[in-house]
Length: 264
Image (tube, rainbow, N blue to C red; front, side, top):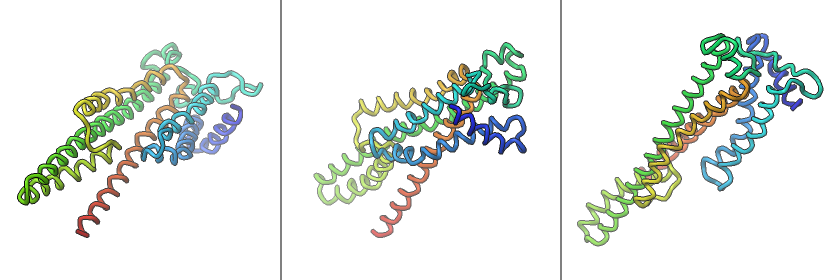
């Protein structure tokens, strides 16, 4: 833990000429970004579904970092000496303060309380963004799978319907069911054909799982302010990272699809 406190103190010293007393808070955000940059290759592997464990590793590897962050701003002493980080602030709130202590100091709208309200608002915005993206992904998964199944049914009908069926049903199926099903499958990483029960499960999970992001608000209310800063930074990074990876994947699929169509 002493190594962590020394690193944060050094980063804060570099930022102090610009950010004054909030330099250590900015150093925590910068430290979190550095951690997430180091974990980015694992996050990319998890997004591609390269291995079953890939999705868990970025989360598991952050747990020790969060624990050290929590201890560093909860302990009065580090390595037998006074913890110098406890004296640093984010505006009016000490980085080691908790929301309950802020309420005791000046109330809900006191100087420290307003800092925590800003933190909670930031977490709520990120959680809402994550919830919207999660529901869209679930809708794309179930809708894309359904379209893929419909395309397969039309293709089967074209095979049994003779030349006219080939021209009408097969072509229509390939235009609507095939690419749409492929896009839905690619967006969700799921098979193109899903049963009605599987689609219903995906729909329910798409409505519930994104709401778990709001659980970060509860954690931020009981941990030190510094740990709350780590939470909001890493959560925002996760959502932005997945949005960027999905954008790159969709762009690659569009370019590849266009190249295939132009060669036909």
